[in-house]
Length: 73
Image (cartoon, rainbow, N blue to C red; front, top):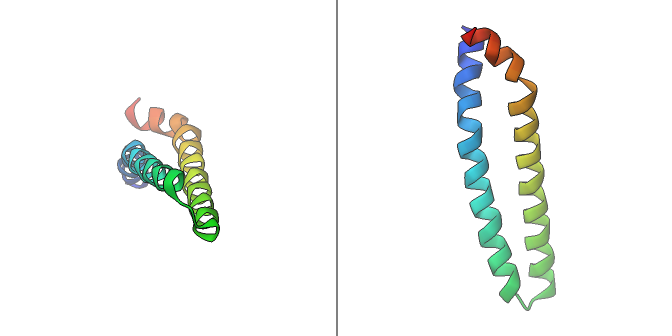
């Protein structure tokens, strides 16, 4: 049951990554037009945080491929 639950969660990771990438793209677009230095720093920080989350999600997705293979194999 635990492995099947994980498989369900794991299957949602690519969609979550895609959503986070859209958010990063929106923030990068806003950053291009931002003239306020403090807001630019905030946007850069937010972009960095989202990129870190994406990296962590990819690590989880790839690290557990062997487990997923066992569930289906």
